[in-house]
Amino acid sequence: MTLSTQFMTMLAMVGMGTFFGAALDTYNRFLQRSKRKSWLTFINDVLFWVFQGLLIFYVLFQVNQGEWRFYIFLALICGFAAYQSLCKSLYLNLLERLIIFTVSTYKLIVRLFRLLIYKPIRTLVTLIISFVIMLGNGLYTILKWILMVIWSVVRQAIKFIMWFLSLFWKLAPKPLKKYVEKIYNKLEGNLRKIKNSINKWVSRWKKEK
Image (cartoon, rainbow, N blue to C red):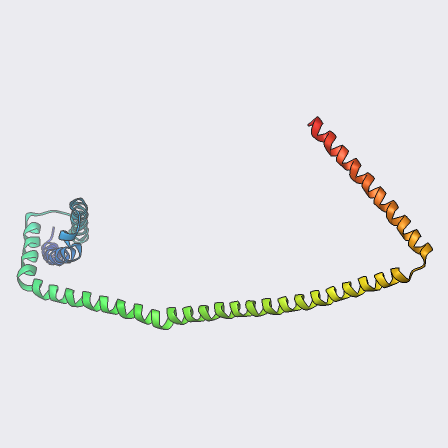
């Protein structure tokens, strides 16, 4: 390993130590251990440390092909200590401001979405539904009125036809009346025979079943 590679490795590990300190504070800020279950906190801790280890090894691999030296651990500790003493309070303040800004931006976007998109669409849909219901009620009322008028006309027509037939029957000659009565009695007798035949067939079918 050349001197320049060692120097770059030292700088990279100091940077990774500083990054690790910031990542650890960020992780603790969002984890909120007191509100989490112990088993879930344990799983999150394991995943966090595995991710940080893989990230440090990836950076080290990019710098010196993954060769480990004792000074690498010292550089990581130095970077972490420098972060704790110089940058921690500034970073935490900046992180809180960033969280507040993000939350405020999110709430603003949600309010704008409700005001400019959700409420107008909901109002439009409500108006459309109200219009459809009103139109349906109107059509139903009109159709009901038309059917009532048609039924009134049909009923009056039936009354007129019955009155006309009764008048015609009264004025009809006796031979015609006798002829009509004869046909009526004959039809009635035929219908009675058909009905009796059907009843006998149904009774026989039930007995065989």
